[in-house]
Image (cartoon, rainbow, N blue to C red):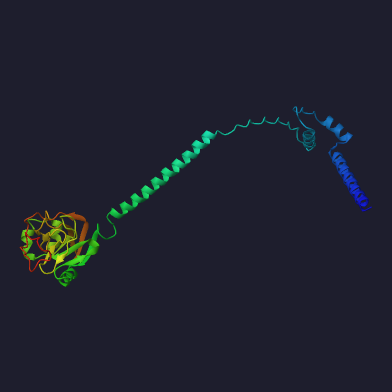
Length: 283
């Protein structure tokens, strides 16, 4: 009994949906149709424009509505034929992928090399704002002389990798025959700036407080207090820097290294003032 009731309800609902759908279709047809008077008036007022083949009823209806509003019939263009599907070439896809990977690898390598090269150049390029490789303002001559006395005859300046020692005024006559104007500019004020590196194999040369010389602990090269060679395998005296004095202040150009004086140069006549710090080097 319950099954029959459910079947009747479903049947009634279906019939209701069918009736509603039929009424909507009739309303749509009535809304889209033109009255006899309207069609007669349209024929008298204008000449119809022939439509292209394949025009649908909806296109005709749309064109008629446009004409009633004062426009003209719009011909409907034929649709373009569909483009044939062409399958992609798998070989070309593979080549494009390989090209992308190869270019990515090459680009990454070039970027790495460029970055490394830039870092090396930045490290090796002489600094323009201070430090070794640039012009350094060391300070007032009186302050430098005080630093030399405090260092027992030697003043070391790490920012310029240099030693500054006193140059005796009594030796200037001989010095003018040997040294360049850039060196004499400081020597005439009583100081000389020497590069810390031994000219034999590049070791940093320390001072010896007892002998008052520079004595290299690597191979025994020895230089007097103004950097002239006194013994060992060094081929010349210590290299030095161009100096300039302005307003009582000393500036040293550590970017312009001057080669040390040749063997046999001895403008000061200084001999060892005590025991050597490195044995076997003096000749």
